[in-house]
Image (cartoon, rainbow, N blue to C red; front, side, top):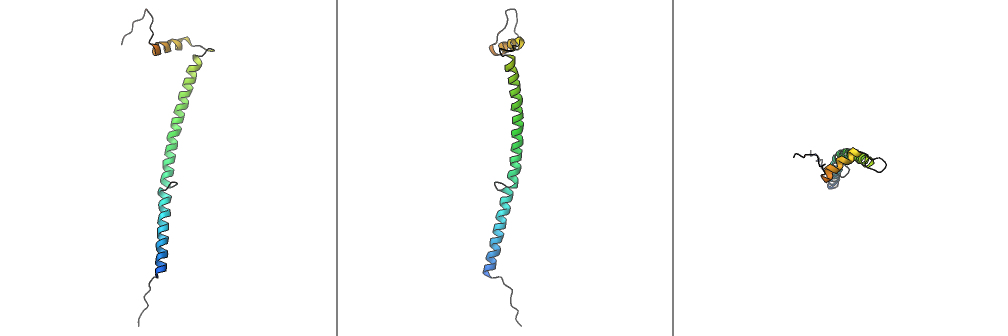
Length: 100
């Protein structure tokens, strides 16, 4: 009695190889592709860093707006003006002594 060996035909081997290749490709693309899991994590981290920088720049803008308003023609802060003249231009009064 001879038994018929159960062998796969070449067409079914090619079909399985193609299915495995496509499955591997789509799995790789889902994990490391342009829109994959790793890229999504990277985008979220970058977005958080950009939000932090945006908040820092907004705070800096508020400070500059405050200083600009205090030095404007409508509202002049003499103490701030004196501080800026001393800091930027290096002015001192005749009766002052500078220690460095």
